[in-house]
Image (tube, rainbow over all chains, first blue to last red; front, side, top):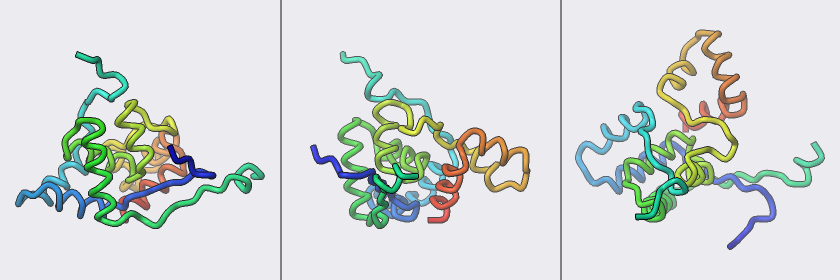
Length: 54
Length: 105
């Protein structure tokens, strides 16, 4: 695994995330959906580390 | 500080749309999550790739601060001094600066 010699922060801007989402979502209401994602609170989910194997 | 000088933090130029599509799809595959969930995770973590990855894996940000809620964002836009002081207490001044920068990015 590559380890950089110093802390590196990789940031994706809001506009780029929007463009990428719109490109991948492939529905007419992609822009509307993106705004909802911004405005809605994070829904509950189970992080990978806490998921139990079947 | 001396430590900061010895170990500077570099920020790459913002990722391109193609980079972002690759990262979104990689996270969807790695964490078995849909596009909506992964995209929202990025939005709530200010577009920080490492923080988003850590959040999806553990449920926490690596810096220990919570993710942003809608109310936090509205308080950030308000002129209510008490609400702003509460945000500083909750997130720290540096995180607030990052949030403002991300929202305008």
